Amino acid sequence: MQRRRHILVLFACLLGLLTGCSNEQRIARGKPLRNLNPNQVLESFEVQQIPWQWLGMKIDASVETDNGVDSFKASIRMAKDSAIWVSISPALGVEVARMLLQPDSVRLISKIPGNRFHFSGDYDVLSAWADTPLSFRDIQDILTGRPMGIDPEFDKFHSRIDGYSYALISKYKRRIKRLVGVDNNALEPQDSLGIQATDRRYERVKNRTDDSELLVKRHWFDGLTFDPLQDRFDDLYYQRSMTIERQDFIDREQGRWPNEIRLKVTTPDGDLNMEWEIMRLRFGRAYDFPFEIPDNYERRTGF
Image (cartoon, rainbow, N blue to C red; front, side):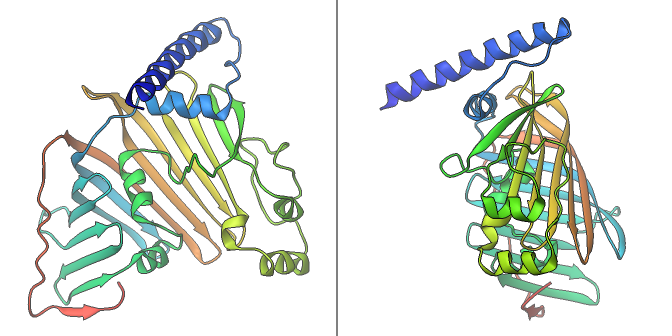
């Protein structure tokens, strides 16, 4: 079994090298990228991923909502698939909040004068704050620059060439076509998706369908490096969308990593924009995750 895995990894590496070289020559001659199926795109992406287990970073970030813009710095420590620890400080450097995320729990301490409290719960509260479903794996993917929400076992994609990028577009059922007016075979990478059906038809389809079945996913990968450039999720059930953009990929000793990430959530009730730049990145150091709740802090059921 182990030998078979090594053979598959070697094959994927060879595929990535050959594809990158071939596409570079084609672009130099003014020709389009080679056609690749979704599995070939994902394999070429996975080959270049940094195999980290421990990760630490410092970021400069800002969040914009309808209430205004907040800027802050954050220190982040991560144990892969196990824990994400975040310490948030404003410009003056005094910690105002601390979070500890684990696969089945969300914990928060707010140290803001006049608003000191702690929260322990699940991801429903965090998802409600962002107005979009989020899991531990989703947040880990967002912070580490991986395409979010791809499940190779269940997801089915069409592969499209979009300029110098590959776009993977999720296949969807006929009921989505009834709502948006376009079949998934005809959907182009940059097409916007909106409800084209009447309100009556929309409500009828919505009432007969699970929310997960009305989600259209798109992922873009650089045609040469296979960097994951962008994810877009169109949630037709709740009529909201989320876009994640990654740029300024830097060659580090361990591999390539995006230095800037932007996230935008658009809903009928308003928008949320968040962006951050990585100021420091470290791999391989085992961290602790201190999280002690002061005795005089109020316990809340939300934040």
